Amino acid sequence: MARKILAITLERLGWDVVTAKDGNGAWEVFESLKGKDAPELAVLDWMMPGLEGIEICRRLRATPGFEFVYVILLTSRGDKEDLADGLAAGANDYIAQPLDPVELEARVRVGERMVNLQRSLAARVTELEAALGEVRALQGLLPICSYCKKVRNEANYWEQVDSYLTSHSSLELTHGICPVCMEKMMNELDAAPV
Image 1 (cartoon, rainbow, N blue to C red):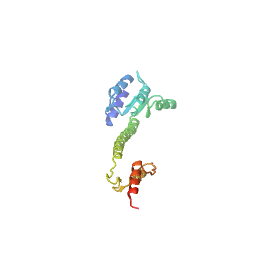
Image 2 (cartoon, rainbow, N blue to C red):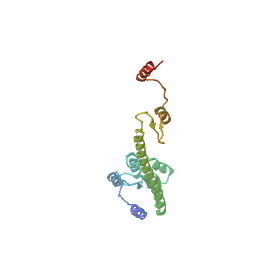
Image 3 (cartoon, one colour):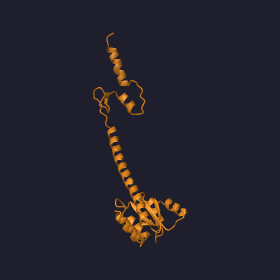
Image 4 (cartoon, rainbow, N blue to C red):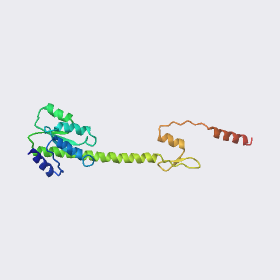
């Protein structure tokens, strides 16, 4: 009876509802919907035949792809220790039975907001990862003049390589003369009129 009331209330709120008659059936539903169709919110009875709701909570938190399912645990247990146990197992919220449809709606709406926030955050993370990938690819491209060896910076100005490197990194440059340039300079000095 409570399962029917629960399903009707959730369907009225606009959720696609999948029910199970016991804990084993509930876990099978999760297993069969792994991937993109995995439920984002679950209302589980603590005391179900087979797997209890609290055990399903633990499994969800330990299974990749299910760790962010918003779980509301229904229970007739009212002690604070039971509440603490349910939350420690991974439940996000807790409703004491007998089930009050008004309280259920309020708590499901909170869960819905959290699911939407998680979805939005995941989309932002994906966008940021893509942007970071583009930045890394762009960092590998540095226009350099083939004659004077100056580089073009982000403001479209040409500057010396050493100036560019010190302003865009934590490098500290020292100056010296390579053997080829030293020999060229010495030859030029020897060839210069006195």
